[in-house]
Image (cartoon, rainbow, N blue to C red; front, side, top):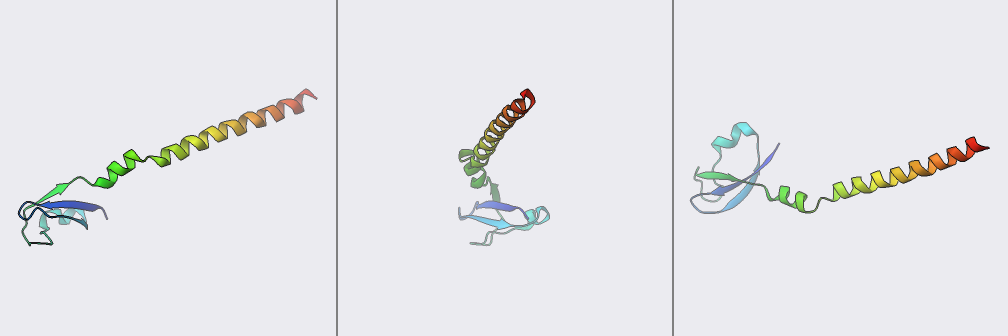
Length: 82
């Protein structure tokens, strides 16, 4: 179930809830009870973009795999040259 961040237009409090899309329209502020809410962007997506370590890991893995393939090719070529 997705997590949504809400901003209450009445009390200006921000809070997060995990709920289905079908329940978005019926939500009320957990602080003041009003239904005057605005969905705000989730900050975790910004963190992922700023600290994209999974991409770095993938690039490292690809680089290491390419090196391993080069070494393997050298070994094979030596075997065939005998």
